[in-house]
Length: 449
Image (cartoon, rainbow, N blue to C red):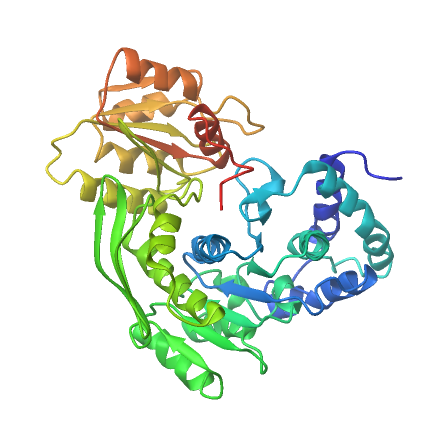
């Protein structure tokens, strides 16, 4: 039966994994994942990825931001650029973009129907514990869309690994590796060596160049041992970010590369690592364009760049920051950034928190109480998730000046009309962040070049 709605296509994307999940006994990616099935699906629909230019981006932190920086900068430089990322905040379409514009629902459904036959043909041949990865199925739609629309180059964010990731079936011209840390040990292996080797799997023999972002010394040593036969550009050797400061307008920094220096760049995103990500993007784009980039274009690109929900400044009056933190560790990083922009606690801070019941809402509330003058617990206007009934009680146990609002819009109205604050932090689940973007009149489907 032909698909007529986006939800039907999304159901197909996840259906193979959901069918197999209860039969899977192994955990390591090399035992469980089968990227060759993604290759088979792509070939079944005409191999739309062949003879296309791709940049693969992997790492443990910042790979989504780095992918976005590269695609935005190339778009500003006049290229037609595809971008494939995950997860999405509200709408699955957000994962597939060209020059910042998400794929239209009608195109998503139409191309879902194009891959439907091949998907089911492969599905019929699989054992009970084998599955077509959701990222791979979505990638097939993206590859068709990018080929159809004639992108000059496409930037692809890998999943948790690299070597056995569904995206790694693409023949990429460039590889970018963001900071690597111990993560997903059940899937990638027990130590940094095995995790790093997984990430290095996106570096193929015919690669044009590899861009290695800032790394811990032990990770860097592993990389240099394994990349000796590949052309590699290393952070601090061929490019770097310096003079990094976090202010109320975002992150300001210089980028230094072999050909040029780009001074006083500003991103409306918070965190020193964002400057490091930007340096990787600048260095790679210099290679693609064949030399130093236009200073004015680089400044304009970064100062207006949107990457929703990642320590993002969405308003300056009052300063309003949104972040998708749903556990203690990510909230701790956000709290550190709040301390940087409000070091003397001279400005009042209100944190509006909407974390679902099945996430670490207690941890987020506790951490944000340490940098806030008041807490408001709430939830997004639309969500299938269940939110805790004891959030206000917990908030009051950490900060007496706490209250509850039915929805995010009510919380913002309360702050504006009854309890003004100089800094507002909206933190919580992805649907809350999406809700915030809509309330501030910012689209998630068109985030600009």
